[in-house]
Image 1: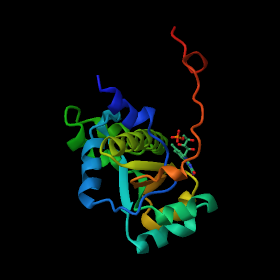
Image 2 (image 1 turned 135 degrees about the horizontal axis):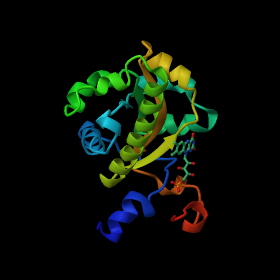
Image 3 (image 1 turned 90 degrees about the vertical axis):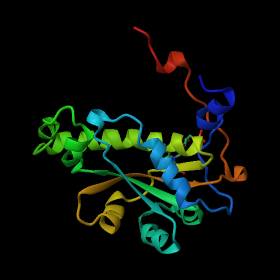
Image 4 (image 1 turned 120 degrees about the vertical axis):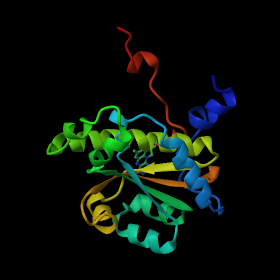
Length: 194
Ligand SMILES: Cc1cc2nc3c(=O)[nH]c(=O)nc-3n(C[C@H](O)[C@H](O)[C@H](O)COP(=O)(O)O)c2cc1C
């Protein structure tokens, strides 16, 4: 079991942050987050998530036209914005990533609906691993889906093989910018043991 303090850090007390302290996030820290998150499970170990870490003002400017009004300012101000995308050619890496079944590539090749569903599902999972990994390493995160995916895809992945899933602002949070914590559903509302 993790300690109570650790559980608070990864989920119980962790919050979705809207503002960050003026404290940079090093490239080494971003590499450490990826090294941790990549261990989370995906189907056939397909690992479709592709991440862009936007740090420079120039990179943020490229993202700006795609952001919804409510997400614009806080994203431009965040030390880093991660674009979490999914690679529609993920299956080409399966001979290396899933070597105990060399047929795995054929489960996807020429099947666009299976590719899309698998890539979206597993990149969403990897996005969640990303949030937990970042928190576990002392960072704060603010996930966002309020943006124009087509604009992000055209700007950052113009060849069409990678599609954006969601964005995450990352840094060291400013608690004064938090919204009040919203309630969660009880076990009985959301779960059934059959
Ligand atoms: C995939 C995803 C997309 C979200 N999109 C937005 C968004 O576009 N803008 C925003 O301000 N918050 C966004 N949120 C934040 C949620 O509203 C927030 O995580 C939720 O209310 C729980 O807040 P808490 O973590 O502070 O308890 C998003 C969260 C997730 C996980």
